[in-house]
Length: 199
Image (cartoon, rainbow, N blue to C red; front, side, top):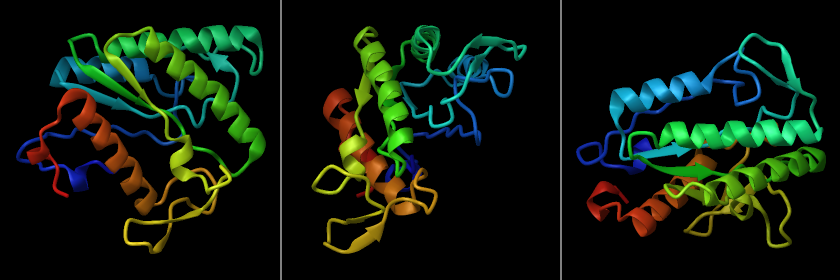
């Protein structure tokens, strides 16, 4: 999310975790449930910020790679929802508050439709977990008609690139916008002290 550049390391410790091409669909490839349990036990964080799922438009498999649910099936939705809820429970197990960051609009309309379905799951599950807040990022990266855009104006009015050429990933500038939005939520919802913010 690009949080480190805007948070004061003397006030806030940031322990980032990112593994390329992973999500909740393939625990046989990388098991985020195991990772989050280890991380919260080690760090006992006050806040956990989660953003994942861009690689989850595929069949769901178990830890041993056996097929659990075909993509697009009702079973897929049920199992994925269960995994999301379990992940929220694991992230907040030791009392942490959880900010679940929804995925932004994508360049591909078909891909965006899949992402919207997942975002609805994240938002609905967040409502069921009292320590979890969902952050909708969809409109952060759209133009005025509400469509995907690769460039936006910053606070100074300059046009900046916010999406990579693949139409999926965020640029450094896009991550900066996302990080600032996440920090605003932390400040307004959970009283993150202003002294923690460098800007």
